[in-house]
Image (cartoon, rainbow, N blue to C red):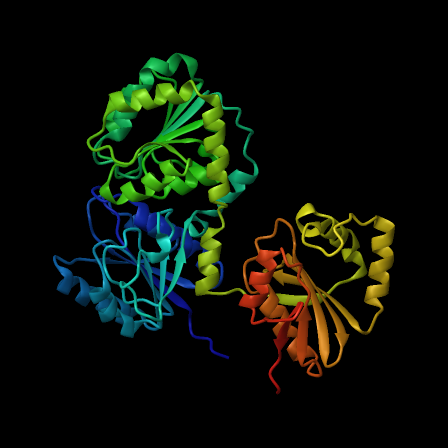
Amino acid sequence: MNCRPLRIVFRADASTAIGAGHVVRCATLASELATRGATIHFLCRTLPGDYCAWLEARGFGVTRLSAENLDEEIAASRAALAALGSVAWLVVDHYGLDARWERALRPLAERLLAIDDTADRPHDCDLLLDQNLVSGAAGRYAGLLPPRAECLLGPRHALLPPAFAAARAGRHIRDGEVRRILVCFGGSDPQGHTLAALDALRAHAGRLARIDVVVGPANPARTAIAAACQGLPTVLHCPAEDMAGLLAEADLAIGAGGTMNWERACVGVPALAFGIAENQRLVLEAMIEGGYAVGTPQMTPPDPAGIAAWLAALLASPPLLRGLAERGRALVDGQGARRVADRLLPVPIVFRPARQDDCAALLSWRNHPTVRAVSHDPAEIEAATHAAWLERTLGDPHRLLLIAERQGEAIGVVRFDLDAPEALISVYRVPGSTACGGLIRAASDWLAGQRPEVRRIIAEVLPDNAASLAAFHAAGYRDSRHTLVLELETP
């Protein structure tokens, strides 16, 4: 067995000038990878307002870099990687680094992930992540990546901590009335948009129960913001210990673009958003055009009167606020970090035979509307009928009923009806599970290993079930008249 440590190294910076977004989202992915046994290390430049101590407090190793130009940056990064030893993945999230840096560092890592938002420079990577909602996303990186590179695109890959998915599940119902507002313009807010938002809120303070104001430790105007909060029903958070919880309780959020787009959308809080940097403009344009937020794609410098005008319009439009909340919530589900981690360090799917004590769970899963909608017989099954079926199934030597699990969580149910050299597969995902791709292929591989006499697996899928058809095709099944067939390799 290979027991060498599985090390993943991140290259990202934070500062008063550039904010903390790159480091924070990398730390989210790093935390998920750490739960899978990876050793995490960060390479960060020493800058005013950096997050090196913040990373160390979360248990990550940090090497502080000092470099004045790209050549020095490459030399310092190479030395740091060489000192660490073997690296499974090198993850770079930095607007100032491109294919030249990546080519120089690739020999010191097995694989490289580039995280980007702007599609304005070439990359030499194995995998590229762009979590943004941008028009024409599929073609943005044409000509900028090696032919072998794969892409993970869109907000379903947004790197959010697990707290946001939890807050989403427990959110309160929004009726469009605004009693509580959250204001946050990122970790540094270098131009003072938080102060402008507080100025705009003064005229409406009497109708509000609470204003939560979040500022990061790199914000240079913390003292001025604290002073501006006087006379308003504010609670100042520096920093916020539970951003997800604050958003879940808010009826409206005012802030910038960047990762906050996905935090707000995931929890389902309507957003009044303003681009405070050029790299936020395209994403906010798409968010506003798609009806996921309102605001201005670019507002530099801050404009208190403009914020006040947008705020007045929103406060007078409860139906608009309800629509923004629901559309945003449909865009982001909070599982992005898990999806990306699955691509870097897949967690194996394991299969166990179903047991009699699975009876109640199997019935609830099978009768869930999402499962019945794609079943050959969509009728709801009675408990007695199901119990009798399960007893017959468990005693049938020609039928295998399996529960698929990942990290102890049931994610799917698979049935094989055996008639060597063929088997008929039936599979569905456990409703509400965090399952991702790979279930069908993993189940097919399991059968091939357990029952070598089976040479062909057949799937019968309803012709209008596009999602299942795509999943079987992705698992290697091919169309054969009215079925899909997977030919197993001869041992």
